[in-house]
Length: 208
Ligand SMILES: CC(C)(COP(=O)(O)OP(=O)(O)OC[C@H]1O[C@@H](n2cnc3c(N)ncnc32)[C@H](O)[C@@H]1OP(=O)(O)O)[C@@H](O)C(=O)NCCC(=O)NCCS
Image 1: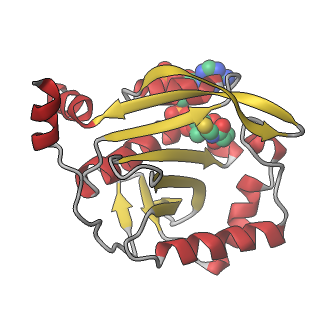
Image 2 (image 1 turned 180 degrees about the horizontal axis):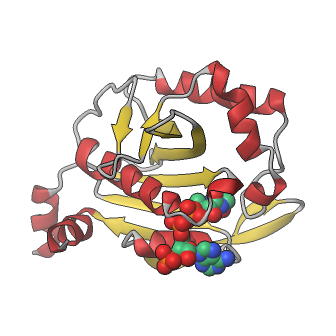
């Protein structure tokens, strides 16, 4: 019964909207998500080139050439129709400064899926001000409100307590551990998965 009600209420989109460029602003007036441009490479290097930022992520600190390639890849993915990947720059609304990288990638492995995975990273000098939580809120709004997803999930390193806290505060439930999920720095690493479903998102918003 519950399953068929959900299926009627949260149908999988027949086709995803072609969305490019995307700009999302936060209600707080503090942050925005926007498309990357080639000129963002030095600012992105301050994030993805920093060993402290990538400590719990799945890759080594990147060089300028590598972040230029990242921007080229996310720009090409943004041009796909239908669009499956939304890798966006986190910028401050007041001065436009780029302070983070936010990603929502729609799952494509199974035709019955209506879900997407998020990822996020901020420049280290911006940590501890609630920007991470606000960024996740914007990604969830994109996924649920704009794309009509039913499930959004994120995977973190078991040691990444801050990421756990950010997803927890966003209402994402810790659902379990994927063992031996990815090879990182020469060894297979587990990941802990957190998720939130569309009805939980709606309920949390109406409760506020
Ligand atoms: C994860 C990240 C985006 C969080 O951003 P942030 O803006 O610093 O997070 P917030 O300010 O929203 O705060 C997150 C919560 O974690 C808490 N926190 C901060 N440092 C912590 C720590 N070392 N251990 C546990 N909790 C911590 C904060 O107190 C806050 O909780 P509170 O609101 O109850 O006080 C940021 O730390 C980052 O970019 N890390 C590197 C990249 C990364 O790990 N990305 C996630 C991959 S899954």
